[in-house]
Image 1 (tube, rainbow, N blue to C red):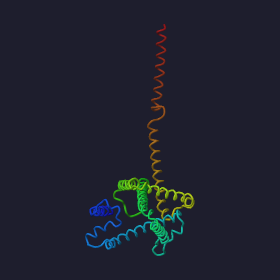
Image 2: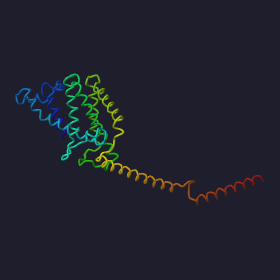
Image 3: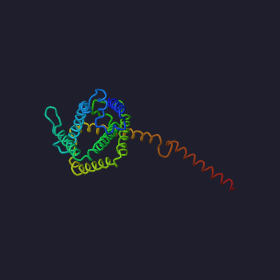
Image 4: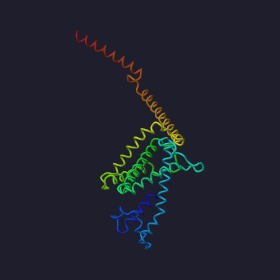
Length: 281
C-alpha cells in the first residue's frame, strides 16, 4: 500500500507544472494540483493538505511514543518516561518528552534559519539509517530465531523482501550523503548525534540496562530455541563422528585381516632367507 501510494504521489507531483526541477523546493507539493483543479489560491490549497499533515504527525507521535517508552522500560532511558495511563496504557510521559524535543527543534529552526534548511535532510538520513537497522534486525531474527512470533503479521516476502527494502534505504542514504550539495553536513550531524548517544549509553544506560517484561517473554523463547538448535546439532555431529570412527578403525582393516597379513609377511620373509642360502651354496 505504501509503495503504491508513494509512487502515485511521486508521479502526480512530477507531472504537474513547473515540473520536477522545482519540486524539491516546494513545501506543499500538492498545491499545484489543487490550484489547477479547484481554481483556488495557494493559501486555500494548503488547507487541503492539512489533514494529511496531521495524520503524518500523529503517526510519528505513535511511533516515538512507543519507542521511547520501550527504551525506558529497558532502562536505556530514565524510567519516568515509561509511565502510561491506567486504562489504555498510553505512554503519555514518552509522548510529552518527544513532543517537547520536537517543539524545541521547531523553535530553533524558526530563529536560526540555517538550521531549518538542513534539519529535514538530517532527520531523513536518521530515518533511513533506522529503517536499514530494522531490516538487519529482521534478517537476523529470521535466520537465528525462526520460531519467534512477536506479531500476527507475517511478511510474505521474508528475507528477500528485507534485502530489497534495505537496498532501497541504502540508495537513499547515498543520495542524502553525497548528492545534496551541503558539504556533507548531514553525515557530520548524524555522526555527532551517534557519538553523543554512544557516550550516553556507556556513561548512563549500560550499567542500568535490563530486559523489560515483554522483552523477557520474547527473548526467553529465543534463547531456549537457540539452545535446543545447538543441542540437536551437537548430538547429530556426535553421531556422525561415531559412525565415521566405526567405519574406519585405526590401523586399517579388521583384526582377522591384520593377523592374516602378519602371517603372510612372515612366510615371505622365510622364503626370502631360504632362497638366499640356496644361492650362496
